[in-house]
Length: 260
Image 1 (cartoon, rainbow, N blue to C red):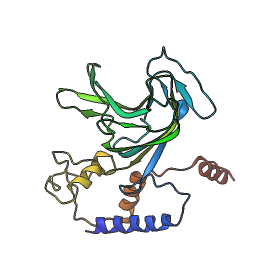
Image 2: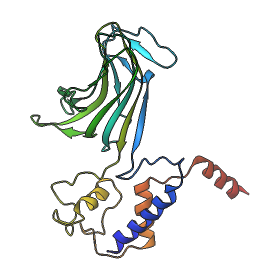
Image 3: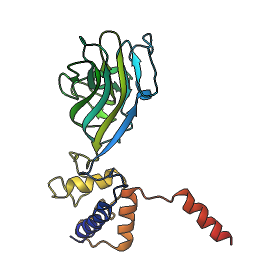
Image 4: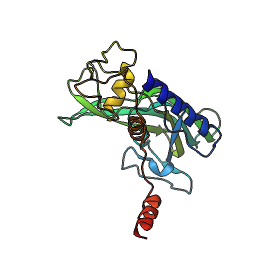
């Protein structure tokens, strides 16, 4: 199909152009990964009564557990792992980390389900002699900030967070890195367009374009999947999909030229 071949060619060219540029972060697409850094100042005591026992130049400590939200990860992204940089200060007690979600029902506001098994049933812990340590938590989770939970009648708004604890004298955290990549949204159970039914080979991808506002179809509740794509239509697709915008410097320069 013309639409698919043109878009595929353009994206392949773009990927090739970026391949030799080490300073360009690969934060879009379905295969290349990205990461979100949570500094020590992004962690707070689980119990406000615990407070902090130390806020040094590169770490934060508390006698109890500490929490940090990961809501800077884009909605719909797939989280593959979390790396935590901690300090184990007690030979007898290990530092333990978990990835959790807590959901609230959107309409009633009541608390829903608390789940701290997103990074494995037991989370991850340090072991061995005290000192600086790096914990890697393998995750296989799509992050959705609006979802439905089995057993609840309403749609819920989940909050995702890291929980780090070291029962004993203190919990000390330096930073965390959440590794993720963007995904094509899961296909819905119904079709938006009459000519792209649920069994169409491109159904999931057409629905993703419609859901994200990149296309409204060709009119009459149709998408016209076999129609040719013009250069003008291509510009709309790519601009919306990539979120292209005018940097403020370019806008100022353009206005300065226009005033001359």
